[in-house]
Amino acid sequence: MDCKTLDLAEQVAIHWLPIDDLEHCLLPEEHSAIAHAALKRRREFASGRVAARSALNALAVNDTGAIGVGPERAPQWPAHTVGSISHSRGLAIAAASRSARYRGLGIDIEERGRLKTDLISAILTDREQEELTDLDPTLPFCAKEAAYKLLQPLLGHFIGFQEMEFTPLAESGRFSLRHVGDKPGVALVNAARGYYRPLEDCWLTVVTLDA
Ligand SMILES: CC(C)(COP(=O)(O)OP(=O)(O)OC[C@H]1O[C@@H](n2cnc3c(N)ncnc32)[C@H](O)[C@@H]1OP(=O)(O)O)[C@@H](O)C(=O)NCCC(=O)NCCS
Picture 1 (cartoon, helix red, strand yellow):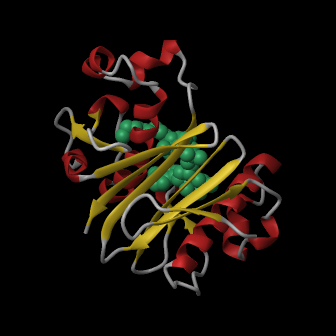
Picture 2 (cartoon, rainbow, N blue to C red; picture 1 turned 90 degrees about the vertical axis):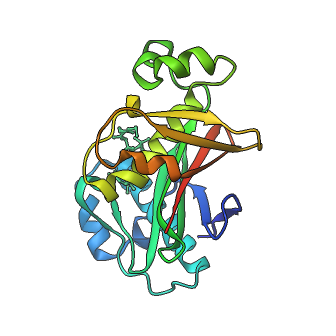
């Protein structure tokens, strides 16, 4: 299965494909992780693993082994690599890089315009609601989900949507995130770099943290 590729962040392989019946591509350990799940979930999981393996192959990591399911559902990447997976709207996407270059990566895709008005106050801080009035609120939502996938495996605890704020940067397609509050470790996000672009009818966000 050939994946399409995107060049968004330095030394990050981003590969994506339409979600399909790719369960036969899973390794036994991966298969057993979702053997009892519904068909839709098995397909998105398998397509995400295919995108992840393709991204790793682009880094010349050819014998990837199983990309297992770790604590809190985080994918378990091969030694010396970091990565992240997302699926939405019939697409599966993965980002991968070398751990010598990045301490962590997060990726997310969300249908543009999907965040409903009644959820905005839970996802955006008061300041974001005041200042980001020209922006689809789905974009900061997508950015925070990507940041969660980067940070949660490093910190080992939950991070809420009110614990960081999104700022679009003057350089097109870039954003920063700022820690709000005092939960240990979340301040790491201040040093992260954020990238976004539309992908089909979704927002794609990638968050990177240097090694
Ligand atoms: C975990 C979560 C981020 C997943 O996002 P989603 O938009 O629902 O689903 P996506 O398809 O984009 O992502 C799912 C993939 O994320 C990855 N993922 C799940 N939990 C993860 C974790 N703890 N750490 C890293 N990656 C994780 C997995 O690869 C998963 O796919 P897989 O199970 O097929 O391997 C989301 O469900 C969640 O719990 N969010 C609440 C916390 C949060 O986002 N806070 C934001 C403020 S920082």
